[in-house]
Length: 253
Image (cartoon, rainbow, N blue to C red; front, side):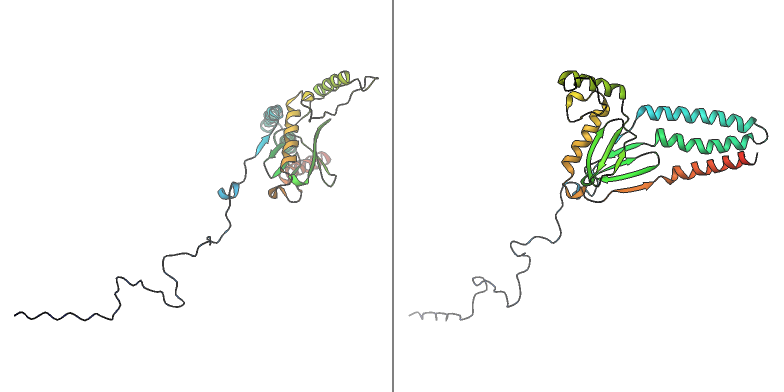
């Protein structure tokens, strides 16, 4: 006769495999982030993401640069000949003249340039540099010269964008004959660069591009600011020194 084995009594301890671990009060589960939260910091796109400013479009006069290089070579040849072969006060006069002439040649031929990007217009004229955010630009025109007007009424010439009066007068006469608005046949040298038919020179197209860029970018946040004007002391200083030296030499001669 067999004796039945005793049945084990059920354990009252909870099973660790079947019961999930409950987090204690005030403690968040590790390895999880709250839903709906993003890392701190402002998300930037476009130019802000790269940290770089938009590249400039540069407008210069190739003819002006070529003439400036030619005049510099010519001045160096004449002054060099006097410096090495001259006698008495001639070398000093040649040096003073060269010190006066070189900055002026550079200022009016090689230096002028216009830089434009999505935020501002920077004008480099012979003796000044002007920085105009697009929000300060009111208009860009081409008459006897290329000019930019600001919201407060100031006017600055664009020396790097010369105007051909011959082509301007031809375009004005053509427009006058087409419209018949002026019975006396008088013409104007001011071109409306908004009209593609009146753009007869690259200058007109350049002015039209600058006008369009100003109108498109004037309301953007990056185009805000104030106009800044800086004198070109690197040009004015040497030229003034050369002029002063030349006056002293001539006065004491």
